[in-house]
Structure formats: C-alpha cells, structure tokens
Length: 312
Image (cartoon, rainbow, N blue to C red; front, side, top):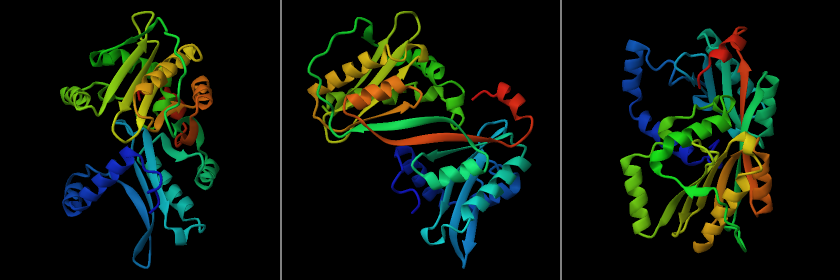
C-alpha cells in the first residue's frame, strides 16, 4: 500500500521474500526466543489501532560490528497520516539502535517525498549522497560517432578492475546504506551462460566497454541492449578526476550501438555528484525520474572516531 508505486526490482524481490517468510513466522519466533539470532536482523515496530497494523518501521544492523543501523519501510496507512505516527516510530527506532550500541543511523528517502525528508531533517539526519534515475522514452538517435581511441571491450573476468573503479568513484560515503560487494561484479558461470544464451536466442546483448590508459580502469560502461520488448539499461562509472572527460565518449558509444536495436526506453542511474554525466544525458534526451537520498544521523558521541574505522 505504501510503496507499490516506487518499488524497483530489488524492492519487489524483497517483498516476495517477506511474503515467503511470513509462512514461517512461528518457526522464526521459536528460533529467535532460543538464540536471539534475529534480533538485529529482523527487527522493527508497528503501530496498532483497533486490532489493525496502521504503521510500520524496520530497524536492523547494517554492519557486522553493529555500529551502523538501517531504518527502512517507514509507512503509515493513508487514513492515519498527519497524526505524528511516523515521528513516534522514528523516535522508538532511534532509541532501539542507541540502546543496542549503535553509533550511526542511516536511511534512504526519495527527494520528492518532501514530508518524509523534512521529518528526517527535523530529527537530525543529514544528507550523505544521492543517486538519480534518468530515463529516455526512446533510445536517442545519434547522427554520427567519432571513435574514441581508448574505448575497448573488457571481459567478465576483469571484474576486479571494475570493482576497484566503482569503489574509487563512490567512496565510503556512498556506501553508507549498502556496501559495494565483490559479488555484484563477479559474474558466475550461470551469468555468463545466460548472456551467451540470450545473445544466441536474439533477445539482446550485454556489452562491456572500458577506457583504460594505464593498468587501472579510468571509466567503464555496461550496456544491456534488448531486441525483445523491455528497456535498455546503461551503467556508467568514471573516476571523479575524469568527470567531463570520459563520460561523454562512453555515453555516445552506447547510444550509437543502440541504433542497431529497437528504440525501446533506456534507463540509467548516476551519482548526483557526477554532474557532467547528468547534464550530458539530459541534453541527449534523458529526463530525471527520481533521486534517492541517503541520510545519516549520529547516535553516539564517539561516532566521529568510529567513522575513521568504518569499512563499508
């Protein structure tokens, strides 16, 4: 009810997992009473009126040291909004994280959700970083392409270089909500087999391109180009010191490549600090869709010392 309009693929997958877990609620309760294993992982609070859950908040450990705690799924049923329920749920969640020894609380909110954003600001949360989703209703046409001498393919086996590039661009601040994981970039045998099969079946092609003028990757692009109905998808990473230099050639290459495919919609998510890429995408026909802001709040006085030891 609260998030149906904004769930992405990961959110929909999480909802399916929650529905599956609901069938094992009794078993999980027994296990938790015996070991307490799920206290930090499957925790939260609900607001109940007349026997119905009308408000919810999730609070869970965000790292193995329990220094960061995630707050999520802050939701109030439409007929009960405007009564301060969200604020009280937030206060209880922050109290819980503090009692558990947490040093920081972190959450994410869409910038357009001004009511929630201002609530979190009033509770002491500050912006850390943000990701902007952009979309073009049809893959933009490119009249000509000037070949860039440094753009070349790279293999799925080069995932470690890509992982290092992404870590360098986003840094520790952009990983407050979710740490970048090696498994996000390490293609399994099944992944590679799937790419080969869908290419053979004519569904589409997964392209990998890199700009590399030294052993390290300076910029990289992944492009999922579809021949069947759906959306093309781009992912772009550039070292901050190369913003404005290497983003445009890679975007141009991707749009040129898509001239050989149906002009389905195309989407991309970009860190808002990567302003040169956002501006060029907008000039190329993309429109900003929504911006997801990561916010944090200090829970303990020694948080400044702890942040130096943080390893997202």
